[in-house]
Length: 109
Length: 116
Image 1 (cartoon, rainbow over the protein chains, first blue to last red):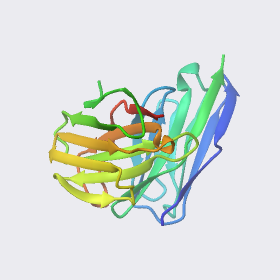
Image 2 (cartoon, each protein chain N blue to C red):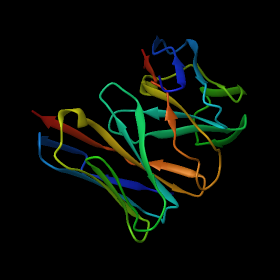
Image 3 (cartoon, rainbow over the protein chains, first blue to last red):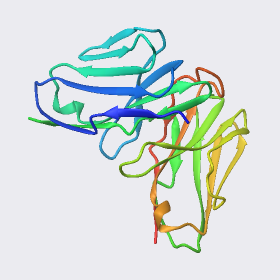
Image 4 (cartoon, chains in turn red, purple):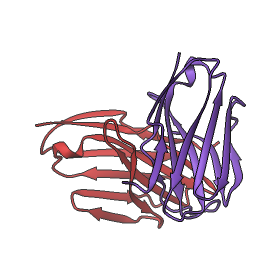
């Protein structure tokens, strides 16, 4: 079945440093979504990418979808303590949305 | 307020108990989902309902029984659970059901289940 791998599993940065998480799918995706889950919270939708090579920005967050539509990345510039949480990618192929294991981000002040 | 409400938020039950989790969405969405979230595992899709019809059942043990009486409500009935079933159970809804683009998922805050 479809697999979505996400790396790293965990990253601890100093406030102000950049952060990137990568997502790779075993199959070509029709779209990919990104979610953020704060500690003790629930996943919250961030963005959806649909087109090959698509790049979208939300303030300090930059999302990319690979040309082959099998990989994606989320980059945070100059992290802040409010960025703490687990970031999940979720790839859709057909009718199935498959989540990665997530990358847990810790930010020290 | 996410538009998706789950109750109870916390539940402790013995292996012989019968309990139910409830989910209600106020977003007018057509699809509802149950996910299981355990430590160090990806979100596991359990069931999908699209327009009140169950369209996906990911080999979930029969001790979990879903019910979708209408497009706004979803239940997960639990009986004779095992300790390894302890997890956060998340309900979600999306504008569209099956298809290449379901739209974003709106998650509830989850029901934290502990099975003793």
